[in-house]
Length: 193
Length: 81
Image 1 (cartoon, rainbow over the protein chains, first blue to last red):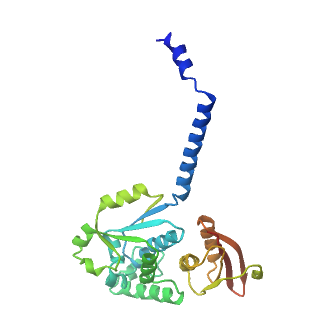
Image 2 (image 1 turned 30 degrees about the horizontal axis):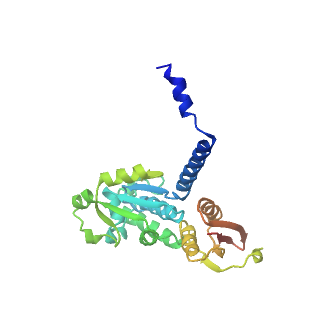
Image 3 (image 1 turned 90 degrees about the vertical axis):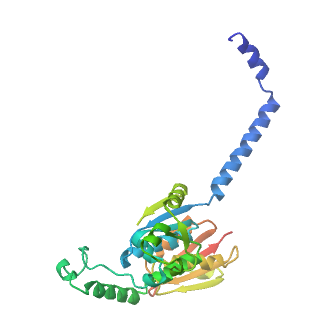
């Protein structure tokens, strides 16, 4: 074996021209790789939205629309109560819980009284209105316009006995956890809200 | 001030709050041609940081300047490609 080596090496010693050709080839490959990673401006974000209270509906929608403005390809997978955000009728009537949130101006014992969720929700809606904060509906429409893909978990649709026609136009149905995993695996940013 | 640039379009998002100034800026920039300049008028104080961050993280746009006066934040963004 070892006696073969010098011969083999001698035979395989590339000429100057071959080396130059090899360098050119490598430079081309490097350029292609850099170009790929540059215009692989295919930045992706994947959000899992699981909450359906008024306050928790905002973060996924604000982040989704903003990421879309940055050029991210965004998918938001809505499951359990998060599905209500995509439900056209229910999304306009999301509630704020007056208990379990120590930042609420009312003590839990008062917040637990009948009708208190309504009261705190009305107060928040008024603030949203006074402050010209976008509504949930506006954020969904804007996000859809910007190419955000909203996915409605099929299992939850059936669990909640919703109809696919109940969702905003443009919402993707017929998807499950595997789709979400695939999106998360491909994404640069993954969030569970 | 802003007179150094020729402003192609003005986007008025006064009153709107996060995320709308950035989101609408993006949509307005999409409608411009390369080299054109968008003026954005906002009252959201967060727009100073947000539009700067957006322009920094987005290919094909360049933040020319930002100014504040009379409660209005003015942003000048050029579409570069």
